[in-house]
Length: 392
Image (cartoon, rainbow, N blue to C red):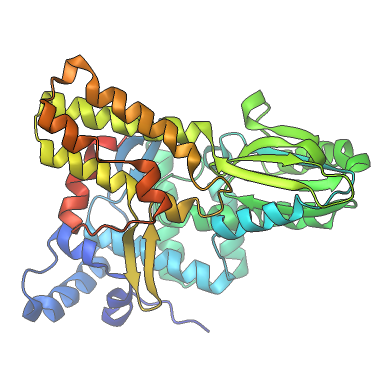
């Protein structure tokens, strides 16, 4: 049985360098032990009841974050225990894309179904999730008390469903949708099925597609969920000539007589537009608060590989070259970003000197990403660089 405690040892395992920096947990190495002991005491004093959550709008959606280090750590440990007990693993986006690319090469008479759950987190029944965990009688009383406290707070301020932003919500969402995943994969005619958060990709026998979608809608309705029927949120078409967006990629399939289908992947237009938006925001920020060095750093940050997180298993990388490793066009799709960048550099409203234009013109998304250039940024520098893109 997994020990579910909130003691010094368990807190040390989940406390990150960012926590120490952001919440000023300690200033000198010799203060570490006392600071963690104090944190243990603070969590116990709160009796596993959370304080008011901080509310922020990110990318058009309301998110919620803990307002103090005690709640941050308690909720993170709670999530850790739920994941380990129920063996919950978040889907690996890169693995999914690799598998999708492979199955689409099959030249059989199949249908591609890309479906999306409408308002997924907001529509989930938080109380039902807690009730299931309570009935299982595996989580420790302190963990259940903390979950109940989060639910009670959400009700008191009108938060519907699972609160976006909290560490526990993705894990509870995975548990909530587990029966749906099992149902789809067990349906007759399903060749392959996967899900990333609320986005389904299903490859199904052409003769079974209508029955599958109808039954899936019924299954989702049973747990308070529904499919998003907006045109840009779903795609259903023959796999031999499918052309759709999934997880940031534009995927195009072409049938080849007597051979496997040809599958091309590029960065989706929606993602490219988001990159352009970040470039434009960076230039507008420079216009309002001139700092050429910071503008160059922002452009570099957008183009290079960087270490997002380090752990005992190595470094977690981020950046376009890593996130879109399966593109089949050698990142030629990024040349449109370079064209947009040049327009910004030469736009009269920014009044760059000839020397400044020359310096900025050396920046190239296509060159940096295709060559997998790497950059190093301190935590404080990365925060300063990226703060302007908060809602992009």
